[in-house]
Image 1 (cartoon, rainbow, N blue to C red):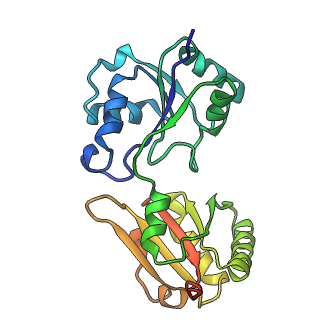
Image 2 (cartoon, rainbow, N blue to C red):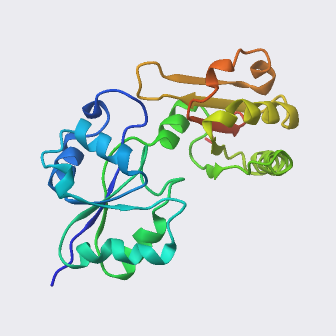
Length: 243
């Protein structure tokens, strides 16, 4: 029996009409799926409804894949695919497997010979880097930095050394309720001449994207960043273009 396919389904990164950021082709694929692997059932169902999903959701099969999922259990998630059904791996926001669970499931699919098909949609990391003004030829994505203050400080100092050595922008994210703590730590332990870009609510009705030196950031009101999912990019001025 020929297996089905595993589609990687991006979801909006800000509130607003789904078809503003999710392409029509992606929505057409979603509409014919009946098996989904999701982080949280309620938000997944809400997204499908907003995307105009044509079938009763109670007729669909949902598997939960998040930080509490036992890795060995994910084998069950691909059984419908091995039986010939297509399935969708869905992120809570943005592209699956980028600072989100799911890569182990994708790797398992590859090992089983299941075609993996990423679908088009918004990525907050790529949009933030593109709009930052920082050098985008090479960059490092850290995901979440350690939550403890000392570990976070040590990591930021390591990031600073890497920027000086490689000139690569360093991209990372934080839990929204720790945005201000992260920013304060950056301002305390990183050199004033470093460039910091912070973005949130990109593709939303009130997007925020600001790039400035750390010295300038010290004089900027930043309270509005609290509890908003944000992308931080730390770097330096772009190197001169070689002739």
